[in-house]
Amino acid sequence: MGIEDSGYDSVKEIRMFHSTLVSTFRTGKTKDIAWRKWQLKQLWWLVEENEQAIVDAIKGDLNRPGFETYLTDLAGIRKDILYHLDNIDTWTADEPVGDSFIAKRLGVARIRKEPLGVVLIIGAWNFPVLLVLQPLIAAITAGCCAIIKPSELTVACQNLLRDLVTRYLDPTAIRVVCGGVDETTKLLELPFNHIFFTGSANVGRHISTAAAKSLTPTTLELGGQCPAIVGRSANLERAAKAIAYSKFLNAGQICLAVNHVFVDAAVHDEFVKRLRHWSQQFLHGEQKITTAIVNQQNWDRLSSLLQQTKGTVVCGGGQSDELCRMEPAVVIGLDMDDPLLVEEIFGPICPILKSDVREACRTIKSKDYPLALPLEYQDVITDEKETVLDNTNSGGVTINDVILHAGFPGAPFGGVGEVDMATIMWFDRLLAFRYPPYSAANKAKMPKTKATFKRGETIQDQRA
Ligand code: NAD
Image 1 (tube, rainbow, N blue to C red):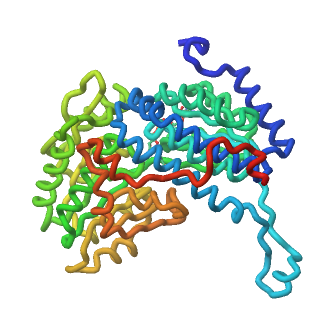
Image 2 (image 1 turned 30 degrees about the horizontal axis):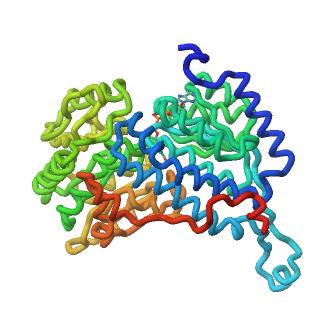
Image 3 (image 1 turned 45 degrees about the vertical axis):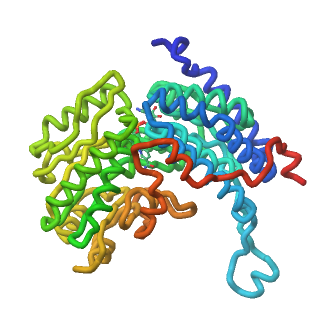
């Protein structure tokens, strides 16, 4: 398909967008706090007034049930916009330097926060709207201009984002570039002040190499394996439900989804029984709808892993249909050398390994640091929680649930360096609305995030 046919931007357009943004940044327009607040509010209305269009685009690209989009892409963006609006004045204010009374009193030295310049945001397909708009919120708050490059695999979302961003946001400062590898390679030849990339580690290496040529700083949000640990003392019902959910939501195509589970031998059989139950229960609800695997290539990859595994597939797998759906699969009786565990699975397959907490920690430590580590325990038998926290490194730990540690505004998110941790014993009931099968009741029970400002506010209103 030629560039003209694909809706991708030509090299000429890409260069033009970039030079417009560079010129805008030089005028100082985006440094104005009023401009930043105005653009954050415009982004809010972009989401609010086009909620259904976003749900439909993601359904078109991934066959994702609408409720999952409300819960993930849309809720995440809304929460972040309000959090940034609440904090922008504090975050952008000068900070006095030095602890001494005189230094503080006289304000002799202070830190002034300056925007970096023009930034590039490259997104992945699994949360095609969230993964580009969330970093955009941060870029706007910081006073930067931004080019967004959504994933070309989610075509409907890519096209919708181009249309909405052009209509709602300041086109002299924020632009969407549509394209695949060729267009992204051209973009990477241009000078940026920061690159924010979400995607696979392999492509992350290309981005890093390209950025190194101009010493451009990067933030790389990559994939990896996230193992869960189920200790002897775990509440098996809750553990199985949460883990089955992480493989059902977005068909397990989540960087924070459980990749595989270490289960203490004493509770292995009962855990597998409960996991099978919940996997089937979620699947065979009223609607029988699951998110699709993004494309045939990925469906074939997952299917081939299920054929190669030396373990036993006790449920799921299933046949591909025209929508590339796959029933969540549970695999037992395998070890760490199994083909299923060589790379991040990124799909609805859940391998189970027999291992006590200490042995699981040793195995986890011998591999790359995971992005997330869910732990299920009750601590009546041994101090399982402290054993895991003391003996593993990961980007974040969710205790007695999955994924949720990433949902707390202000908590660090990312690979190893800063670890965020959430102990979530009592959340399950509060968040019961999240579980499939989905019906209108799920959305009705979901907490609403409301705007704290009125529609139609202009940049002048922000200055008042
Ligand atoms: P990907 O790396 O294939 O693609 C990501 C982006 O890079 C896309 O916009 C794509 O157009 C671009 N790209 C692809 N090849 C390129 C190349 N050779 N040069 C320049 N750009 C190129 O990733 P994906 O398949 O879209 O997403 C899945 C991966 O993303 C998984 O590994 C997942 O774990 C990871 N992920 C991580 C996070 C996180 O926050 N850490 C979040 C979501 C997804």
